[in-house]
Every structure is written in C-alpha cells, then in structure tokens.
Length: 170
Image 1 (spheres, one colour):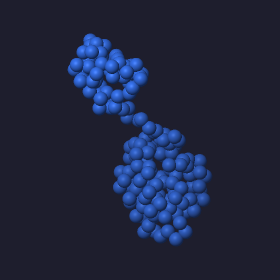
Image 2 (cartoon, one colour):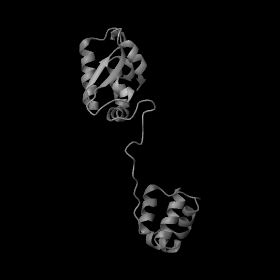
Image 3 (tube, one colour):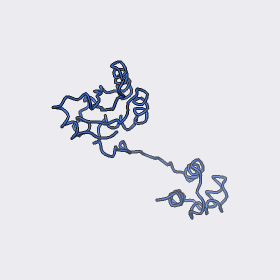
Image 4 (cartoon, one colour):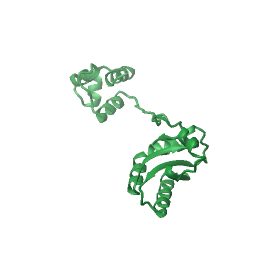
C-alpha cells in the first residue's frame, strides 16, 4: 500500500469527492488528484492534514521488535545492546579497546530477565585494571544490566572452547 492508495481510500471512506476534500483542506483539487494518482507525493504534514480533512485518523503502530540483531537471539539484553550499539562502540574505543563481541547466555538465547551480559573486547597492551573497571561500570550503567567484561587473552583455558562456540559480534 502506498500514500496515493491510502489517501484515495481515506477520501472515499470519508464519503468525499476530491472537490469536497479540496474545500475542507484548502489544497486544490488538481493537486489532490495528482497525489491520488501517485504523480506527486505529499509531505508528512500535508498527508496527515488530508487524512484528517477526510474525517479519519492515521495511526502508526510500531511493533515492539522492529529491529533484531542479525545473529543474537531476542532478549531484553539484546534489545539494550542494539539500542545502544553506537554508544557501546564509542565507550570501548575511548577505553583503548576494540572488537566487541557477546558470548554466554545472551549469545546462546538463554538469557533470563536478570541475566548479565558477557562482553569480550580486545584491550590495548597497556590497559590497566582501573580502565577495565571503568568501562565495565559505564557499560552496566548504560545498558541497565550487570556486565562481565573480558579480554580473550585473559580467559582461562577451560573456558575458551565454550566462549569460542558462543561468541557473536556486536
């Protein structure tokens, strides 16, 4: 369905001719005709005004999950990551790290409402403990979830296989 069809259907549902809609809206009949044939496209404000002049309301409903991460299963944690993705990347870069990845329950699709978010980043060679803690706290504050933050070089050998199996890019 396109703007032309919606406009035409709205006018007809309102029981109006193009001339009557023109009188109500103050837009010439020839312009309304061009809109309805798809030869011109009204701006958003004009479109809404024409719908209202036809006696109707135009309501847009956006589903809760309009965007999903391409690889992470849907969860409250994933939605927070998607919503704040750019800020996360910026914070990580500000703390001299890169290559943000998600692993654990969020990556496996097993996250519960109180699950933490396991994040793996590559820290620079001279990154200190206080920098890592500061980043972890800032991410937790931003996302409103507890954060486990690690570098692949610091993973214990027995944990590495499961992390490698789960890991997903942000």
